[in-house]
Length: 265
Image (cartoon, rainbow, N blue to C red; front, top):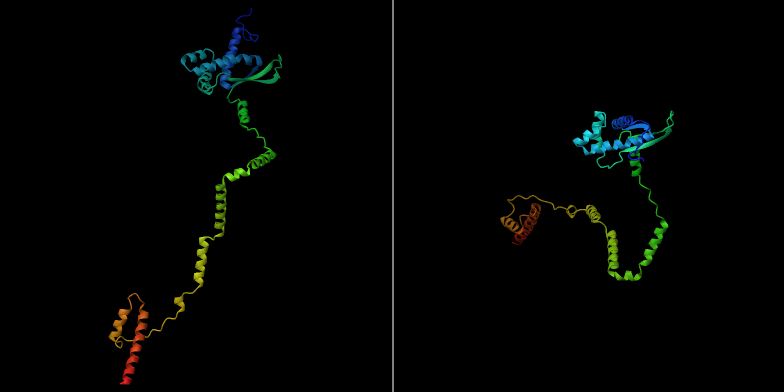
C-alpha cells in the first residue's frame, strides 16, 4: 500500500530533493522566475506558495518558519515586504507555469518557466489587462426596424387622442402666431436708428428762422414808462435779444403817436 507517498521524488534522494527545492524557491523570490523541467516546476509550487502564505501572516513565528526554508536575507526581505503587500488580497495561485514547447537535448525532458504573478518578468498579466479593457463593438441597429417602429407609433396616435387635448393644440397655435409676430416686428434698435437718421435730415426751425435785426438805442432816449412796462411784461427767463426788439418797437409806436399829436396842435 502506498500511504503517505504523495509527490514526485524527481529521481533523487530526500536530502537532494529538499536542497533543490530550497534553492529554487530562493531563486524565484530573488529574481521572479526560473527555467526548469516541467516536473520540477510543478513540485516547487507547493513550498513557494507556503512561503508566501507565511509572509502574509507577518508575525515573528511565521518569519522563523520561512527562515528555516529560505536561504538568503535578500529573499526574506523581498518575501515579507513586497510580496506580502502584493498578494494581500489574493488567496492562492501566486505563480504561473509556462511551457516552452521544447525539450532538453540530453534527456529530452520537457522544459517550462515558473514565475511569480506581477513580477518584472511577468508580461502576460499586462497583456491580459490590456485585452480585457477592449470593448466589444456594439451591433448596429438596422434602420428598417426604426422606420417600422416610428410608423407604428404614428398610426397608434388616433384622432380621438388628439381631440382629448384641445387646449394643447390652441396653446401650440398661439405660440406659433406669437413667433410669427415677433419675426415680423422690427427691433427697437432699428426703429431708434431710423428716427435718429430722420431727425438729422430735417433742419432745425431755429436755424431757418431769421433772427430779428437788433438796433442799439441809448438808455437816455428810452422813457422810463416803457422800461417799467417791458420789465413787468417780460419774465426774467426770456432771451435779452427779444426784449430789446420789443422795446424798440414800442418806442417807435410812441414816437409816431407823439409826432401825430404835435402836428394836430
